[in-house]
Each structure stands twice: as C-alpha cells, then as structure tokens.
View 1 (cartoon, rainbow, N blue to C red):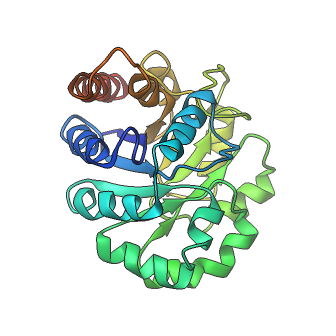
View 2 (cartoon, rainbow, N blue to C red):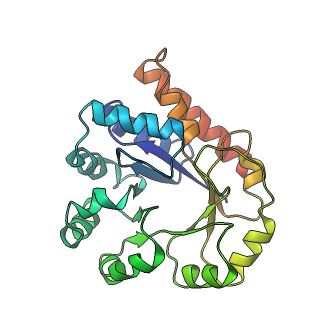
View 3 (tube, rainbow, N blue to C red):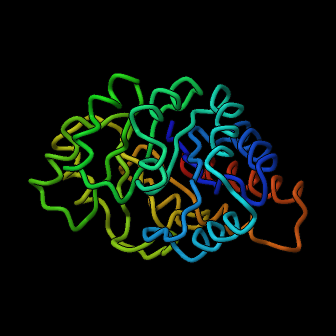
Length: 246
C-alpha cells in the first residue's frame, strides 16, 4: 500500500478549521499529516503555500496555535511539523522537542536545516523518538545521497523537481530513485508538484507521495465555506490515494 502525506497550513484560516480539516483528511486516505508552520519567508514553497503562510500570519497565527492543533490531532493522525528552522529555534529546541513528543508528534521536516547542521540535533531527536526527515534532491551527488540516507528515519523526502513546491514539472525519477535505494531501505516519498493529475506517474518506484499545493489551492478559494473546503480536500485525498494504489 502506497502512502499519502498531506500538507496543510496550520491556523489558516483559523485553528478550529485546521483541526477539523486534519481529522477529516485522516479519515479519507491521508496516512500522514504535515502541519505547516506559517513563516514570513517560506523559500522552498510555491506561491500558493506562500500566500497561505502570509494570510495565516495576518490573521494572527502564533506558535501556540500549532501546539494546540497538534495536541488534538496527533493522537488520531500520524503528525509531522513542517517549518523553517528559525520557527523552532526560537522556541528552544531542547525543550520544544520533548514537549512535541508529549503532544504525540512523530517527526519534523525542516527544509532549510542542512544535513550537516541537523547532526547536532540528532541525539535530541533520537532520545525523544522524533524523526528528522531527510531530504534528497536530483542535484545531490551519489556520495552525498549515501551520506544523507544512511540513517534516515520514517521516510526520505525526495524532491521531485529542483525548484519549489507545486511546480508540476515532469521529469524521469527512476535513475534518481535507483541511486537512493542503493544505500537505504527507508521508504522514499516523492514531493513537489504532486497533485491528482501527476500522482500516478510520480509514485512509480516510490513508497508514497507528499501533496501540499493541491490542498492549499482549495483552502484559498474564497467562494467556498469551511465545510465545502473540508469536503473538497477530503474528496481530493481519496482520489489521490486511489490513484497511487491503482
């Protein structure tokens, strides 16, 4: 069974909505949930997620809202935090990581924390049984891939396109997948540019897909009320889950 990871922007448009959406996604095919932490300069994210980030901050998102969402959602849905390192560093990593584990968090995705710098937090993550998700990209050399994936946990985030999320650019991922599999048995999930149209192609040779912009596009639709947004996202999750397993 191939896995589906869904990214949503925490607190957009409000905390209670994020909770309801997260729980609905978990009931409609989503295996793992990424709670995105709104940040003013989300350099690895496409225009849709960037827009949702800014809107969430304008509406008053605070880090405590992420904690409150996590406390309710994480016991019911496998939950990760996805955010930029400064957001976590400001909370004091030594106290944040153990607290996150108490809330039920299973991992963190920090796209601007290089592998070499992440090693200084390795014991902290391991002690608290929280995975620090590893990234690999087509621009990485085989030697670097070997180094990054040697002790990867939970899954490896394979960047399907050397750019930003939501790009949807087609490329042959099979040689890249083969290079990664030489050095690890950790599941490989494909992210960046994955949506209902591309999911079946992106899943080839991989163990899961990560979908973000396709969900955020629905959240940004001003003509939909909260219930309609949750319904559309849930229907999309079911469709993508079916496509990657058909």
